[in-house]
Length: 356
Image 1 (cartoon, rainbow, N blue to C red):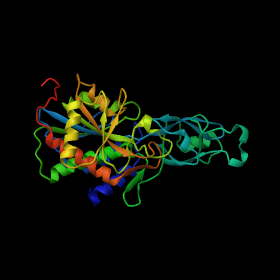
Image 2 (image 1 turned 180 degrees about the vertical axis):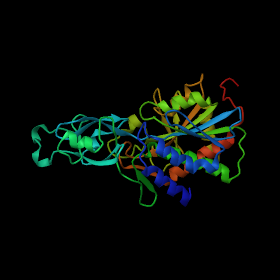
Image 3 (image 1 turned 90 degrees about the horizontal axis):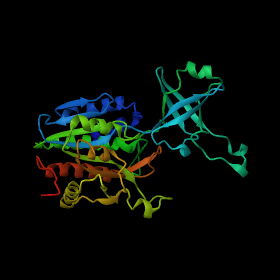
Image 4 (image 1 turned 60 degrees about the vertical axis):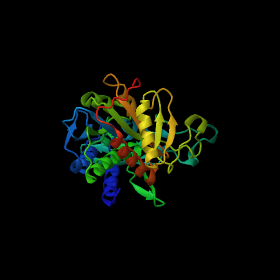
């Protein structure tokens, strides 16, 4: 990373990209990536792909997802309060007392998730925040006032929290899951260009939409690209923070390197190529096992087109799906290095067959 990279990262993260509304962030991403690729493709729902060597028959994908969790306006009361439903895995427990941005055709409408004062709550039967009892106050007294602001059912709602650096080397923001992935694959493209690397295959730098509601963007773009290989990057939990059971979630932490996953969707020979590459270049890494599925776009690519050799490199992250997601700068650097060097190890036409 360099100073220009970090300026782009801050601008990219501070832009809201809720699931289904990723296009403005995709434009920022494509503008940054443009000097390092030969051409772009986009699809109907907003996935963006920068391509190096578009005429090559053998196609390798490196991928992250562009969307972040959010809320929808679901119901407006006669008194002008707004009830919500999730757009992705938004956490109801952290909503109360948060400021919000409601996205309307007239622009951003500010609001707050209110909550009854501690003095007024019944201590004997105190309620916890739930998706059906949290509501947004935009300072209006009636439903009509709210509607005059441009707010209606279906407006998407995001948090305004922005990027900052904690203690010199921790990146903090909402939506690091997984705009960090889009950033890291863009940095790989930059390094390839600046180091004058000529790849023997086509490289498809893919920023998929709609991961947070079921891997849908990756599912669609996999059918368009029809890749031979896919290296996906997403985030995973730092399990050293409080109230996480390592016996269930495994042991991974920020600052200890990229996390390489084991799962049925992860093609074993491709995973071993990643591990060999990490060891060859002294890149620290961690391991994580996933039962049944990874829950990332890896699954969508792996099970597309009759089977695509796929692997997952995760960036360890604290406080997932909160407004203060946190990653370590050294892990970001090492994920970039691992993807970059792994691409240099992939041979044109390699099918990763178990039977050779």
